[in-house]
Structures are given as C-alpha cells and as structure tokens.
Length: 129
Image (tube, rainbow, N blue to C red; front, side, top):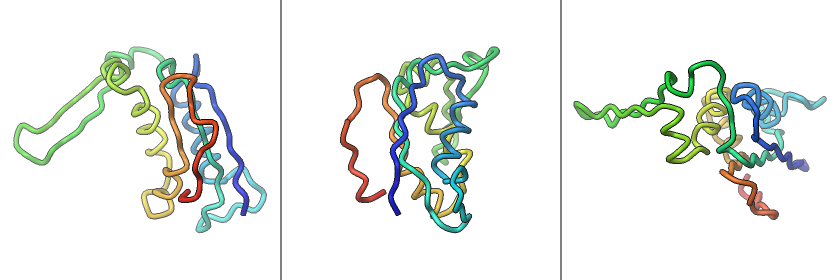
C-alpha cells in the first residue's frame, strides 16, 4: 500500500475542525477501500501549530490534566499555558482523542507530524510508519 502525505496549515484554523479532518485522514475513512481493522491511512504533516484557534473562552477555561499517581501530583494547564510551553501538544492531544484506543490507533499516531512553525522536514522518514 502506498501512503500519501497531506500537509495542513493550522494558521487561523479552529482546533476541533482541523482535528476531525486530520483524524479522518489518519484512519483512512475517506478512502474507497476503507476497512476498520486494516491500517490504510495516510501521513499527515501539520505546520504553524502555534497559530491554532479555539472558540469561546476555551483559551482560559479549558484545562489539560496530568496526574503523576502520587498524592498532590495533579498538574493542570490551560490552552494559553500549553501554547507557550509546546503548542504541538494541543493538536496531538485533540487528535489522539479521536483515534482508536488500541494498537491500530498507536500506529496511526506515528504518522502524525506536528510543527510549531512553518519550518518542517521536507523528507519525512516513513519506514516505521
């Protein structure tokens, strides 16, 4: 099977709308020969992740949670804080939630490449993807 590479520019795009489109390409649901148990999705490259938009008050109200497992180990961050630290994680987290939660979904995630700015590797190593 030959995989195509899709390039998305996240500049001035809404987070959820871009994420659903990317998840559809990663799973291969847009193809004529789609089969749920076969990984026949394409490769996705997203640039300008820092310029992704969220609607409403989500910039300050939406929270991302990370728990270490220890008492007092809950860490939270808003979209604003995540954008300053690493904006790629906002898109990766959103798209991950739309993929299957099994081996197939983990294989699909390996074909997602997100970059904070317009500079990205022109040649992407897809031997493992």
